[in-house]
Length: 345
Image (tube, rainbow, N blue to C red; front, top):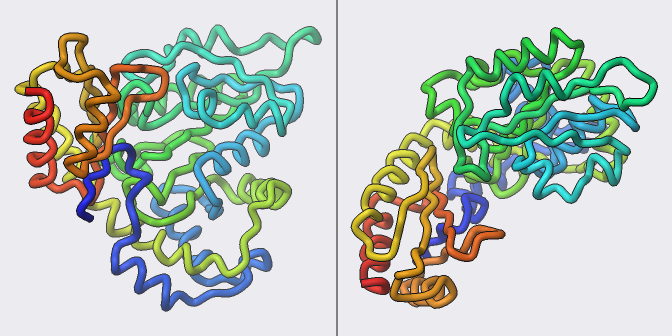
């Protein structure tokens, strides 16, 4: 690609191998459970994460909503981070469509919810209160910088939830980045969770789709929930074929994105008017200082003239997010830094 797009890893397009696999995919009617490629993707994803079953869904947002609606009944309460994607960017789906009440807790700078906060948020069995039914965490935690949560922390949250007969759902949109950061298997990074959804269309490079995993009973009910949300697809194997390559091949190269992100963050320290805020996994956040030569709008426009796309992070005029992915090679990282030095120098 001539354009260097750093706005998100959602901008990636399928590789040629994915396109070939899509063109030649074996397909059937997935609503009837007859698409062999979808069935294979669901089964192999579940096995990889140490779960019994999987469900192919259209997006991470749909996967999270299906999990919430399946785990939690109307009028119940879900413990969730106040900076989580579920709270900030999923249009209050749990409330609008499920009648579920969120109980937001402060997300810490390291992406976690404090265990004491979770414990204290669990409702007593009192007729005045909604019943707490579910705890959710996000890994990696995107809004605080794509911070990966450790397997040990996830197990602690799981143990706490299960002591109180609650379920644990993980929004694992970029869960493979977390596993890569801790150098553990996908099954280890989510051990103890009751369900987890991950995206195929971000760093894994597939064009569409996410997978929700859990035990067989949960996925059976989730399948019904997907249907009522309009998520039943027909010959979806053409999409699942790309997902299989993302699952098995693209997931193995994420360490390259992490290394390039670290290199980018270090190189930005020499750019005038730029202050690096954080670098975790494939994300780099930086602040365009008041003393910078250009304001944020002028800066983004000047970078676009160099065929580099970036934009301020939502809600922050001067905070920018750069997301690394398979298009962004080390050479392109250096090209970005040179362009920034040129327009801000």
